[in-house]
Image (cartoon, rainbow, N blue to C red; front, side, top):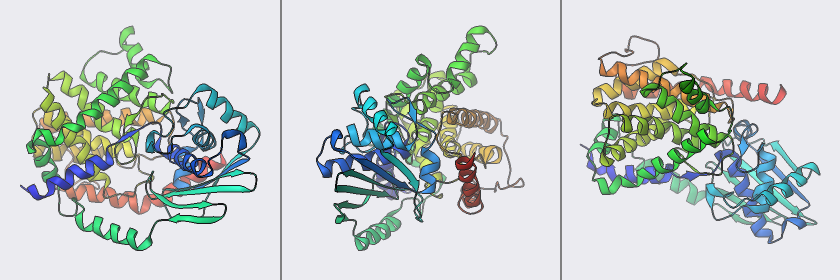
Length: 434
């Protein structure tokens, strides 16, 4: 048992599992705009224009998703609301103080064509540069490589801050050297989640609190495609039976409905995505309730789910053509299988089966229909968990699945990082030109 990895596991979960209000790509643009406004130290009446340049992947994930509290989709409204009412210190909850009056002002700015968003010619997968103009004054903020990492700030054309490349390189090298997953495997994730002192991992319970609140909100309101509410209505009509499978689909989808539909409630994200956080949380919560798990069992199952999801995602590019809800649900299947009495062998079989089932589900941007992909991934998870408990699963003789789960995870990631990059280009071309 590799106890030496445990402090780093805790650090990576605390870094990658954080609250986020709204889809993190438009929120990143809103954050850049809010910081630019802070540098200009002006009010909204003095804004004469906002200009944003974003990476192709960020454009794909931001052009069709509802921005919280606005009822509108797209990066233009994200930039405008970020500049008008964004809290520059609130990171991924930058829009938490947005009011109806702020939204009206932002919509008026869009009507006047004061906000523009274009694709930047950059190699960064995640990149946004937002410039706020006020007469002959301007402030630009560039965020790159993660949703909150400030790469540069310019004020009136003069660079006032730039991330030190030497420091960034050193930090990157240091991160690579201390990356807990360099010498870790699925067994190590399992050992940590099931054996670590409870006091060290109890913080993960906030994922339940935030994402369950989103799920409840999704069932109450008319958000997005109402995938979760549709399940609920059809249970009440007698067309669906209530039970573990239905409840997993219903409660997981409803959280995504609320998040993608613009609810003013934060999600607990995973690997920079609220939907991935929901996918790693809600199926586990439903199973925990079904088996009457105690608080410790819920906490350990959530830690197993979230850390396994991060482990799988760590092998892949931050944004790609592979739907992140699928990989997050592969974390969830670990927590679910354990709660149902499974061991690491059965957990590995369940993850292998999921990769054999839903590998290659494309990400065609953030939008309300993501709730369908989230529920599809959750359905694959419970199916794979139950098969594994019966000694059944996709074997290493089939497709990209290998005999051991860590090799299968690497095979999936090779698919996402290489051949699916062309898929990503094609998806964005279709989205922009349709």
